[in-house]
Amino acid sequence: MNKEAFIEAIRNAGIVGQGGAGFPSHVKYAASADTLIANGCECEPLLHTDYHIMQHCAVGIGRAMQALGDAVGASRRVLGLKEKHTALLPPLREALKTFGVDLFLLDDFYPAGDEQILVREVTGRSVPPLGIPLQVGAVVTNVGTLADVDAAMQGIPFTDKFLTVTGEAGRPGIIRAPLGTPLTDCLAASGGALPANPVFVLGGPMMGQVVEDLDALSRERVTKTTGGLIVLPSGHPLHINATLKVEVIRRRAASACIQCRYCSDLCPRRLIGHPFETHLVMRAFAVGNELSELGSQVAICCECGACEQYACPMGMSPRRINQVVKAAMRGTSLQYSGPKDIREDVTAMREYRKIPVPRLAARLGLAPYMSLETPWLGELAPSRVDILLRQHIGAPALPVVSAGATVRKGDCIGEVPEGALGARVHASISGKVTAVSDDRISIEGN
Ligand code: SF4
Ligand code: SF4
Image (cartoon, rainbow, N blue to C red; front, side, top):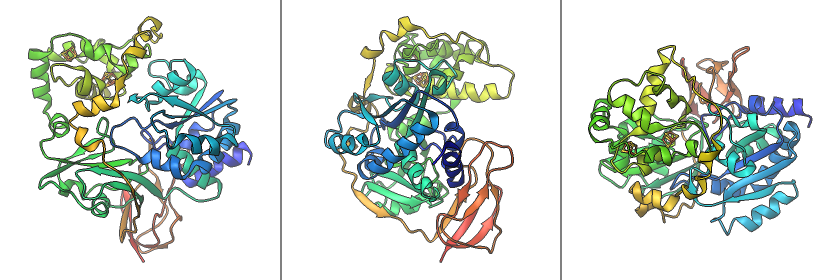
């Protein structure tokens, strides 16, 4: 398959990056790079989705890496994963060597799976602040995305998603669900919630979104970037932290931030040399001066949460503050205009400041769930799906079906708007389209 046909196949299948915000893959893969990195690091505690995919789709990942490596012109092709996966390493190494792919092993630290951290690990190069890996000659793509790239090369569109359901679920495990499946169906397939008043995290405990109750969960759907559903009791520290009011956070910043700068010193982005000092944002925020040159450096923050969930000895919320400042900046003309050089003197401390995942899990109050097994629970067959038209970065897909239409699994139901950045969406079950709205297409199964 030549590059043009490869990119066309990826576009037709609606592939987007599954490890992050859902960047359309046909745009990313159109680039040229000397290094291709498959990201199998899965550094968020409790998630085992990528492990399952690497265990069961190794040959497909290898095929996809070979095609993608040829398409971008990468002379070096590696799959990055944790060295702790001792049982997985020999078969994975064997499966990938026929495709010219080597393993790159990492310690069990957070956030090894942040693509900029992974690029630094593999190539020794730091992506510039506000930059992308391509600027230092690397393309990084998640192993789940690669499994779907392999299917796309065989003409099969992206319609289903693997996810981990864990924590206080009756039967934790890995499931595969059609896109648009209600997350309450995923929960039911995993034995339901054990606590009387559960809360949920969509994604990983560090960067996921907290959903406050079952009613709110019933409105959530599986999307192309859903990787996990974690069940916790109401009042868990992650719940409390995620729902603190901004004014409480500000009062705490003013009264209890001791400016020890641990948040800056352990910031993974700072440790790859970005000129970012989040304790200075804290200082500005405490006195209401965050919409300033000092505050604008939040644009560099990747919201990994290492500062507030691990580094801070005072229980402050620097990540939440950075999110609030970023949102406020969107309504102004303020932009980061500070230095974009890499501070190599700071990177010298990186090796000593990596955050061990078991210790992070203990800090998060997740130690009791770290040893949970997550066996394969099977494929879900929901009676109804609501497929979101925006499951990716860019413009929402434009519906190409109307209510009443009959569709088969894999039919294109949403197209990329002319000239826009976006991704197609496809029917994830066969049945009848029952509703088409601005943000979703609903299908009732046969
Ligand atoms: S680590 Fe906590 S107390 Fe120390 S400067 Fe940062 S926010 Fe303030
Ligand atoms: S969330 Fe905190 S640790 Fe992570 S990049 Fe932002 S400031 Fe740094």
